[in-house]
Image (cartoon, rainbow, N blue to C red; front, side, top):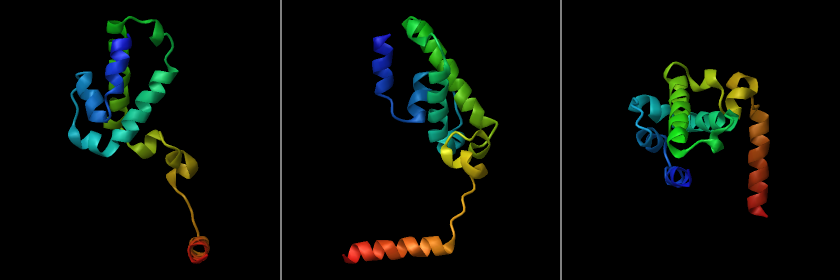
Length: 115
């Protein structure tokens, strides 16, 4: 198990994880959704119980299934629909910032830079 965890720690991109687990993927989907896929994979891992009790082969299979599920979420859906990140959870992904608020923040930055 420790060997698998150490190997996973060396991976850095969604493509690395998908290749490591032997999951075929479409580059155009991963290119747009790589962070969403990894975040969803992380969420699935934390929701799963009993993973630490598995042997290395069983753990590999379980992790592979969870990553496949995370990737599949974005094959059939969009980041806005899946709402993995807070920006999509807040106000249905729409944020409102008034022009006066932007102007005020710019003035604050100018004053701070001048001081």
